[in-house]
Length: 290
Ligand code: 76R
Image (cartoon, rainbow, N blue to C red):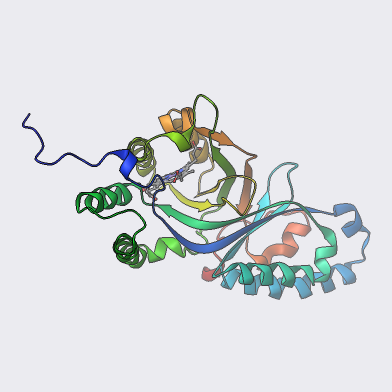
């Protein structure tokens, strides 16, 4: 091997933080349904509450909210809202809260985050080039170069930054952290090593393209875990297979910690009445195609 003409910049000269692009603001609302109280209402009153709530929820669907019927004791309903800002998320929360139906909905938990695309590959490449050109991290020249690159990426990634609720019947949501132990600590690894592990992670994920859609949201500073993972598929077994396979990725095996898992079935707001009569709506779950 011939000696490289230039010595590659060392990790110590590069910022440790990968560049990220942020898109939609996202709120997950998990709710229990007060079945006993609901059953005590007379049919007319139940209808009145449904007729009031349904248009509100349908409008939310048009603004990119998905309604899911959750399995198990963690809640009956999960609403997933994708919006342009935290203000718009808050507006959605308030709109729901002022319906009469919300008296029968009890929040069990929620999760606040923003769509995040981690750009490890471009970050390391760009940082190396800028260090080689003698630029100081965070100097005005450095920042201008970074901003130019981010602008390019932002334009290319627009559809992924502002996704629509995927039409798939099933959702799997869970929050996660990267480990910060004394011995194994993601945040003390050199950026190139994190880049290598993330690339391996992405390669495993890519084999599931077509079967599963993933939306990674960042929640550092917003909620109790560091990331939210949303997976969407038409066959829930795909969740198990993908997540099992990823447990063997170094980045998951060594550095991933997980919160609770929430699995739900999508249903259109127009079918909420059927759900509350005890029947899971079947078939086409994409409200846009009704
Ligand atoms: O965004 C991209 O497609 C580029 C590659 C990529 C990044 C940067 C990618 C691909 N992910 C990225 C970031 Mn992912 N992902 C998870 C989980 O259960 C587990 O073990 C992990 C949970 C799944 C199932 C999953 C799926 N990913 C991240 C991050 C941010 C970490 C950071 O920046 O430090 C987390 C926490 C995370 C976790 N990922 C993919 C997938 C899939 C299916 C892909 C391929 C997508 C595709 O190419 O279509």
